[in-house]
Length: 481
Picture 1 (cartoon, rainbow, N blue to C red):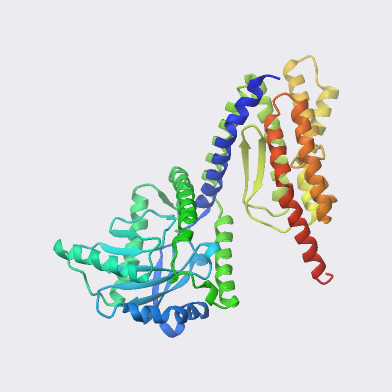
Picture 2: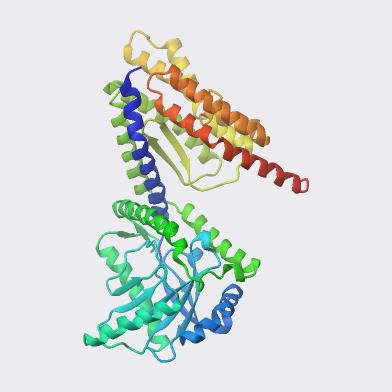
């Protein structure tokens, strides 16, 4: 076997995985829609029950540091209702400092809180000292002078914040004692100014309904930055045990109901990100970019006419899947091309479909192309090499896709129609599919990525087996129906 058949695809594997990660994050960013943010001040008695319980747990620590909770900010952010939350605001008894107590947005740390100290300065800037390490969706505004002390407790944050106020005062910039109403007006206006500046810099675009959306190029850059920050944060978390002191590790002192409320909020935010719908232009740009990358990879092995024929057959095949999705109610669909793998018809809006509907969608990919290939074989002049190449591609690709091997269409048909009802049998089927992919790699020259996929499926079998056992246990504990 030609060594390039293995070396080139394997060398491209890790960059491809990275690109797929960037695309997944980019898709979520392009699906977000922003509205002008607002912050509403409310009395402390209106605090939600989970936040009231948190306040009771840390109230003695707040009092010792000189803070007195007296109001609630109901924050309605840019990205929609799923991010709406109550923030407890505590002014300091002596200093021009406000403490904002923020529920930790990270799903794995639900029930914990973060502290953020803020002070307005006479030059229009704002000092912020916090232990919240954010993954910002919007760039930090220039007026915000933020310093993150990830491993600091409330006392340490306050000491550092006082040092920063003293340094500003020594430089001739005084700290302002603002009333809460003034602070709310100023914050709301600054949030709007941030959106306006992003429109001017062409990072956001205004949709017909008046909401804001990211452009493709800034979304690509932001997706890469977010992935880099997440990698760095994981390294920091492993070294510093999440970097949270006893002030933040309060989840163990909360009731299961309160922790459950925060977990539900994290779940809502996750679903909101996953269900965001991209605009038509964004989808078109991503499809064309993936098509170009796919054609570039094909050009390494095929002639120009071969590339055109294979792309046409793939588009027709995946178009059948998309047509079926649209028939059964999917409206947020997309066609993408994955180098070394093939095409993919994607439905971003989740719908609960019946098994027979899934089967129709799966069959609408290979069967039309198979019928057309057979018709051309029967009636078209086979002496024409282009027609012969088209017929061979139509028949081979669609017959191959009907093989009962996951994740091919035939494997998904088997899974939907028979195997998915029996969790243990499904694990056995996935194992056979992995061996089938390895067999195809051995038989078909250039099928290296199918073999890599088969290896990954084999390595995942222990996890699938555990999931199957959990699913069987769950089913046995539920009442019939």
